[in-house]
Image 1 (cartoon, rainbow, N blue to C red):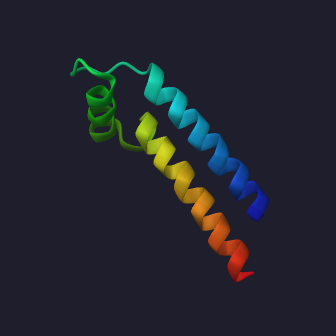
Image 2: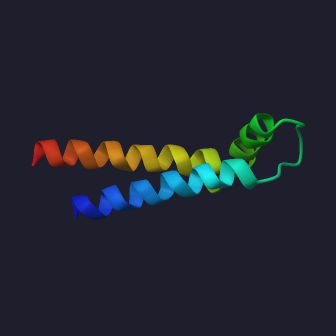
Amino acid sequence: MIFILFIFGIVLTVWGLYRMKTDDGLFGKKQKNKNIFNLILLGQASGIGQFLSGILCIIIGIIAFVMK
């Protein structure tokens, strides 16, 4: 089960990085501003949200492995 959490975290992290580089936003000229606006507007569906969720899954997997 912990292995699945690691894999899911890695997939979310990579997908979030990809989305941060390729997504267009409604406002902003720089990609950073577009990503922040997408995070506020879309939440988890944005690239930053997926990236942070992937990091969180990996951290929870490490904590679960240590506690086991």
